[in-house]
Image (cartoon, rainbow over all chains, first blue to last red; front, side, top):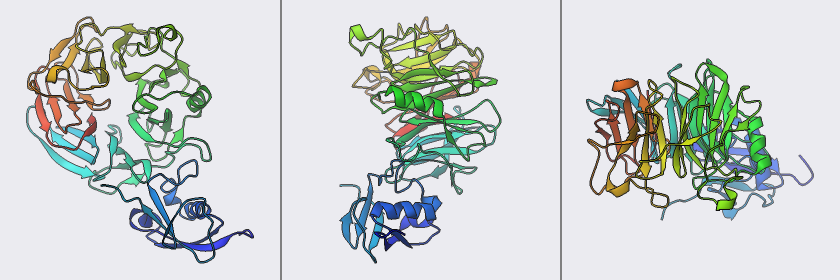
Length: 92
Length: 354
């Protein structure tokens, strides 16, 4: 854990939760949302390639929320933040 | 009894039956997800599905039973931290060695498995060509869609990429060379045609009986090669359109091939509202329309690249193809007559028979 790292929770649901050992909440450390997602993939190899693509970019149709506000991969995180990962709303 | 694995926009459908009788639906998997391709490996009995989930990206899964549990295969990804991401898996093919399989995809990528499809590795040598030469995509993406092993020789393999042409290896994938001599890229400016490497190949098949013979559906022309794919001869004269996607060869007769022409090249539907498969029995000198039992009025169907397959050989060759309008058609007499195996499926991406 670096000086800028913060402990935050990632919350998964549906198929992603199943791939993460059927565990919804994961406490991890990092400086950005993308850092935390990388750490999540390392801790839960079944998720590799499902949220981040090979470029380490969040897949186009994945939505991220930090404490209820829509977020991006490069957004910074703070201690105690809650990050929700869910498929984008599709349809008309 | 023949099993059809039908990849659709809304999942995998497995049909069982025979062209002379009805087909029944015996399984469905990945409901709601695009299944680009599915294959029953005849050696292991294992069923593979290439699934491109809109949210989570392309994956390969395998199972013995389409209605049972599916396992995700490992290694279907590009090198991490690079500039490219895998977009889609277009095709899965059984190789000429126990446990050897290939998968081709977008962006111009070949994967190999040596353990029956549980784990896969990128073919680095072909990938280097793709990165260093900056291959350009066709309308459907930069898709490696055709993988044709050489019967009995796992070191020899041909692949085709839209629009990076034909590539051959003679050393099991360690080195690759092009095989585009004779192809005419009519979609390029005239003075660029002789030197271009942007070859929009739509489909390539190899004869099982005579491996040096291949047929190709090109973006403008049907071609034949008699030297293992080094050079190509235009044999598309007599077809109602030089455009189309799928192609099949009778495994028992190297002179017999089948194409489904579509109106070129923005319309991409069956010409004149008639669904017809065109057959040659003489290596492409003459083509004959085969439409008995297929819709012949106001039928503007699109048949995609991977949506035609064969089973058996000779006079009893079975042919199957699906359309984006949701039909699957079947012939049990080498295309002489046709019946409908399925109606009202989601748009059909691929059909394989086992």
